[in-house]
Length: 465
Image (cartoon, rainbow, N blue to C red; front, side):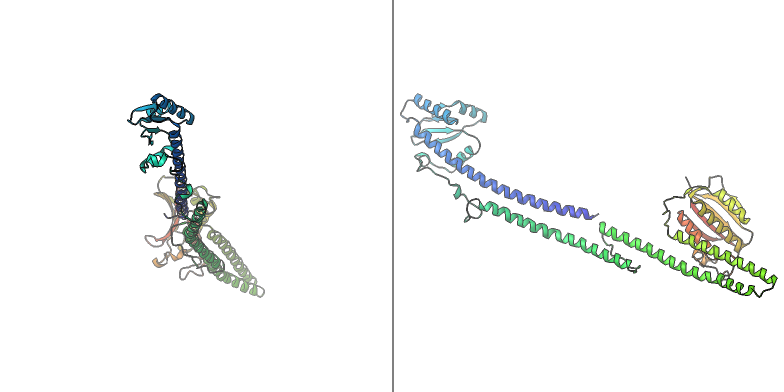
């Protein structure tokens, strides 16, 4: 998955690698220049010392002991391993340091042929030896090197090849560093700008979407293409916006339907109150009964509207289970069935326990039982049993039944079957509340036909393990 933080991290890594390679190149070039200067200086020192030793040694016609003694004396003074061969190539003298170095390094030192055909051997590590090898590889002749300081080669560090030959010595190093840093700055700026701009552009689009949604355009959605954090944030906003829009539309519909349903009992109350003064004693008692019935209907409607509104404001289990406790559904069913005179039948011996809010579960059972009694008469049967991982509660009646095309719509708020609009006690929210309570407990409810006529409302709830 192409996460945003990975892209930013890889961008920084690439830029840091570019910086590292650029810095390494700069340091390597500086090191090569310093090494060239050091080797040039070592070459000059080698030429000077070889010239000094040659002029200070006895001539080739002097006795061998005298030549050897002078050589060993200069080796000790200069603290340089020295050895010398005569004109025939025979070893005249070898200093102790030269012999030790020769044994340790497994080879001979650097040979310098003198003007009198003798050979001077010098040994030293580091730049000194590398400088000597450079002279030897260049094929320089002894007379040209050591016949005199004025005839020997002298390597001036100012003659070494530079990056910008016209600038004063040392200035090109600082200029190179400045140019490299400027190029790296431009690279970082140009490389980071597209990534940052794309990120900020998407965030700006998300901000505009939030502002439009907050201004009342509840159907507005932002672009959630992609797979990084910004796309996931946009997707979360779209899902949240959809839930808010659905909740808002549901509240709008609930308010409109509740307002419509309130008009009927209120109109009947107004008419009863207008007639109570002119009515006879017998009629007044009937009007009082009508008033009490309408008030009870208003009270039930307000209670159910409030409960429906509260359940609409909760997602499934969104209250965090603050009121969820283990509930014995057989006990609850028996108590609610006793209120309506319904029969209770338990299937199997498995425990019928669920995790939920007792008050809401009672309300769901009560609504199903009262709805069955209201529209199906006194022949109401409540059966309970285990179906896999669910507890199934089935409320069956012998009423006229529900047409197949309306078995889903019957759970909508304020929906009534044709011809049932004026049934006593029905406000059209009972089955809607049952569905909301089922969803609140992560369950389902459905309407099925009953064999022999009537309907069965089946409530499935997750069983408590």
